[in-house]
Length: 238
Image (cartoon, rainbow, N blue to C red; front, side, top):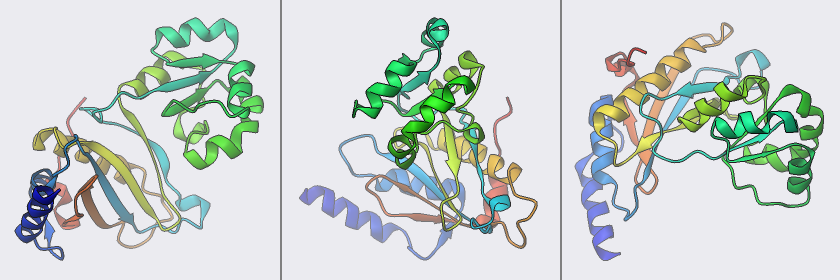
């Protein structure tokens, strides 16, 4: 722990907490300052010029990163029995219908990261709102997790598709990868997220849209990115 503390303090002296860096400089700093003995996750936090109290200014959607997020995404599917094989072949980790709903209602283990449901199952899945909702696991059409196209939906989330949404303060937090990723890969993932948020800008949002951006690893300090330099990010094509 002493070595970790020394490295952390050395890292803090390497950058100015109040300064805003270019995307590449910031990612290099975050990678350098990561001192945990595990592969830390890197998260981006955007503060947007939206009023989340207004329904027409709330953002919610998905982003598919070109390099994934560096973890195995576990997907549960709620579907009728005749579609279970389809879901499993697409890579679903847990598949069920009323039996899965009942298991979760009875306190079963929530050993999945994403829950997908076909529309016909939603009246029954809806009873799990108080369990799945607070954990961000409730299927929702806006997040792309309610769909009849099980194969495409499951494969997308298994490949690292990530849901994003504004919180009550107009912020969006999203994982963009791992410390072990190269700066180039992290930059391309961040570019993809930035491009998606700009695409999803609500028409009702007025004034400056991208207010601030901070990135940090799991155990590291936040590093600010100069939002005026976000045009340096180029999302990969395809």
